[in-house]
Image (cartoon, rainbow, N blue to C red; front, side, top):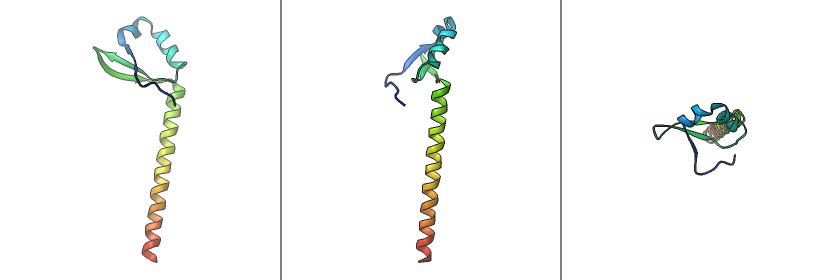
Length: 82
């Protein structure tokens, strides 16, 4: 996923003025949009595709972690037997 380093920050007032345009632009983008209220970041908005990709990557990473831990436990068990 190629995301920009400097976040694209949108104030809630701008979203209220053009919510349809804001959400349509999100749907066509791979970059997250940061939402601020009173100059403080309150949320990050992602397109459904980017969110799904993120969830899939997290699940894959978790499965890999579990497999590594299982392999290490198996190796430790074998070492104790020998």
